[in-house]
Image 1 (cartoon, helix red, strand yellow):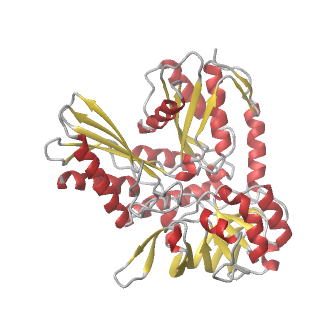
Image 2 (spheres, rainbow, N blue to C red):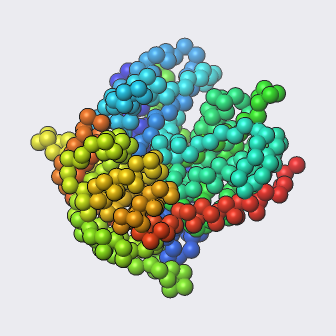
Image 3 (cartoon, one colour):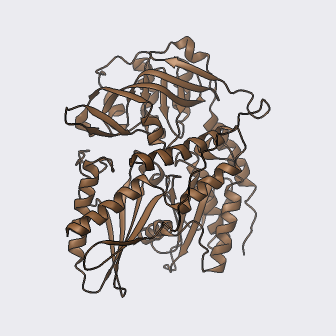
Length: 512
């Protein structure tokens, strides 16, 4: 039992902190293919640096370590209850040591269990097979990309693509639309798993199962292999790009599976995964529980850390770098425009769903006038002296705060909101009226940003749970890009509009 627990703990740690070779190759290839000096190229450089830092620090690649989902195959006669117990103990230990963020929340009360255990957490799927070894695969899929999963019931009609029938061409349209609707909110450039058929439940399960395939494998079904190649080529013509900043790399992998369905139902289910594609697997000795070999470590792949070339004036005429010291004045904010790179020093405060909901009806324990709210749920550990330390601190998806953000900006005089994926028309209007900006940090770059956080000044609302608490952080050299300014401009709205126009170019039938 102890060997088994330690082997699973090693699997969890490696999955959270060390991207597998096939994913690294895909990120490197995207970086080499990007136009030098663009926002997308700079983002991919940051991503590559973050991957290396996470491996060296043995710390989470992304602060959102997601819903741990295990696929376990066992020989006949192996006690699956023992394996389930070992998995749960390993999950609790990994959470305690900061390899996982405490992510298991009671759906009715919002209470965070603190150990990633609870009804339905973690997810474990067992299957019996005739081999002598135990196989355990794990995927850590964060909430931001999980929220961009989508399921289509055919026939239907899709924006930009028109009528969608119950055929291969209809499936093609659904997959393209799935990539389009994710924009930068799922931390593009991403990977997708697609499930054709089944029912609503099994379709999603099939889609997520495709994410366990290697990035560079070839589908044994010739029709699906052709469709996968088509999607990879076409999706990267949409211009969504890394983080939704525009660019050449929108999709890094596409895997499609199919199963039978009822005559009355035709579902196409898409599981969207961010660039931080954390999945790994091991084979174990069924008698001792020791690791025999890893499943996705065929070779060592170093990340390409060559610096992004400086932008030419023709490529990026609007780029400039501005240093801001919090608290920030309205005059400083109104001087910024979309495309500016902002370097922040001083204090910022984290705030996610629970805090925004609370502040709508209540006062804030700190003065936010001229301040910065960071949409972030960090991984935090307390040392023996009782001091908190940041282990991972990348941005969360901001669009969840759209119902609140405009009112919060007005009520508290906030000057900057940092997150990823952009926000909507209501927030954009508030930025313009009250003199504030939205800054897009690089999603998933949890180690890169943790290094910018010099000190934890304090914390409020710890009762909300570590991810949802309001952390007061002293930062230095925190870089982000203005993507929504105080003049009514939004890069996110522009990219969404242009990608929809490009999507419409692929409405004509391709497959019979």
